[in-house]
Length: 304
Image (cartoon, rainbow, N blue to C red; front, side, top):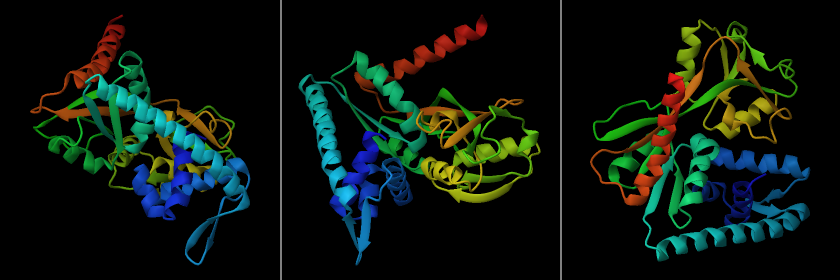
């Protein structure tokens, strides 16, 4: 359970709308439904009832709402305080547009690293569809974009490889694979997979990997975000190929099991995008230097 889930729960009751809650939290409506479902599973009680088109709290929901609202208010207040401090010190705001999977599971670590040395800087993160990130950078709506497996190049955009996600096979706790730590590529033959929709660059990257290794498989479902895919896998509907970083500690070995591909390197590249023509602020340059240092360190290790 995390702050984002509590905010989704609070916003759903406050707005009474799945679509408005999704918009407020920059996720899809199906992701809202799945987060509420997972929350109910963790708490082992139902939180909402629907009556005549209205979303009402159950007794459990009412009790949990009070605590969630207090936590969310404290969190929002802390963020506001940090942003006010940044504004008072004259720091520039850094605006980031990222795909959901990279933003939730990877980029937050870099942001924490940056803020540890630049505590007054304001950083705004917006979760967007991969196709929207390009226009965000070009229009100046965002300073940086993060996405996996960019599907097109643009003369006005710089694309820097900054990380690699190890892709693993994800199975549910009831799967015969649950007790294993690895699997060979050949064993993927004939499995029923739950994948991203075909328009996603990560899906094309996965399809190419399977084609390259002559893996014949069945597509059981095509979904639009990682959280929904994980929920479907946990329910026993099939298996999936996802980044290892997407499986949280409270899921690993419990509801989901990650199996490393034993005989092939399967790494999903994560890219940082920024404009080639627009000048970056001093704070933005400092943020980007984190990745420059990381790439230099990786290059030096490779030489040893």
